Length: 239
Image (cartoon, rainbow, N blue to C red; front, side, top):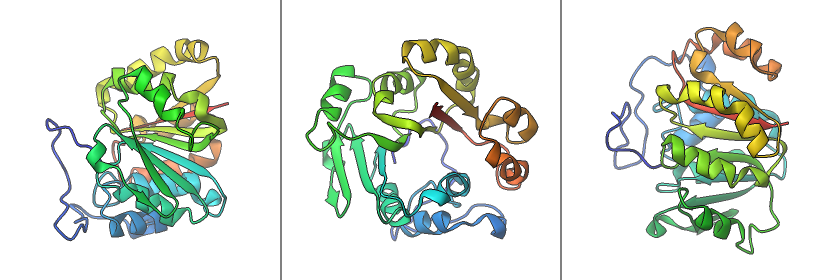
């Protein structure tokens, strides 16, 4: 995972790559994905961002499907290995701007990409391994800048399958209003209807669900504030 230097880390990854939880964890929300990501030393888990509780609720029904997952921003490959364990039938792909981080493992392949450069993104998806692939899940855990999010989204959404899930992680709180403001413009520009689930308002789940068609998550969101008061995720679905 790439971390911006100006962000204050709320977790610690010791040398043995074990996540150390920094606060009380509700045991009911420690999911199989939480445990997998912890084992691999990923900051997505319950000792870090705690995204994995939400991700498990979103993806648990797909675990044994032969799907394609792509993640931008691979750091040491911890989350890619976690995804490969969580989805045992999946092909997992990753990309990063730092070529020294690239690696290959069973069902995992990684590529070079600068998410701020449309030509680099095009070259990425023109790789023989990716050229004819579309993805069930795309995760942007790259530069964490609004302009970078948009550049990669605009040049990668065509690779997302219909009703696929596109997730942008570590979104700054100031960016959330811009996503909602730009929703219709983005839908037109991308020639695809999209819905955006703004998880910033997890303390007010009824407001979230009033603006989302992902109604199967309503019960989960109603209790999710037990873990997080704020979750810096934007979830986009192509519909």
